[in-house]
Image 1: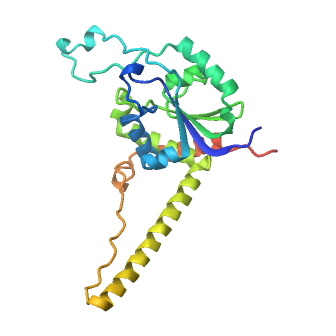
Image 2: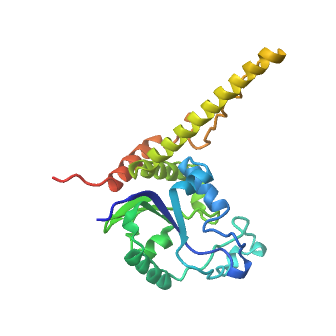
Image 3: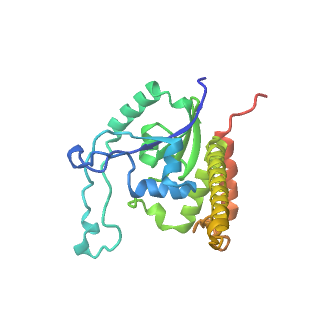
Length: 255
């Protein structure tokens, strides 16, 4: 088996627009989907893409789905205004098969599939509820709900908890969370060093000009609305999912 690299891969469905309508700097899952993924992982956007590659399974936009008559505004429907995009599964399966054969996916610490349709293209078992983890032929898969706002999964707070807990557990099991912690520790050390230098400069300036000493600003505290103690309504189920995903992603020990 090929040695795994300390990186993950995120696989989306397809670009949201035709090529001529995309910006010149377009990247898969750009915009709200990548922001939702970063929030689930507890990372900033820069941190997320520092440890993940990304790709659209289909390289073109298949177009939007046709609006059903009972989903029309004129019919009194007042929920989602977009039905998402078409996803030709037969074509996606061919692309996924080539990606599995030639893409060397087993090298990645974890491969994140965005949505059940992408999971179906990779021939994963669909008898589970998202999110779930699965390993096939040495490839560690994590299936998340598609991170676009079209998915009704994100309308439920417990679903947010479940997806975030499983995603973060998968990062730890794959070793990517440790890499992120090391990066954060290095950043904090650099910030502390810069703060010490600023303090020394202030002391020197104070001695010369009697300017009152100014303490360096405290580091901001970032709070997650998904993990405040008062809102962990699904903590018990979350622990089970953490253990399950860690078990599926960790290599089995020889008997």
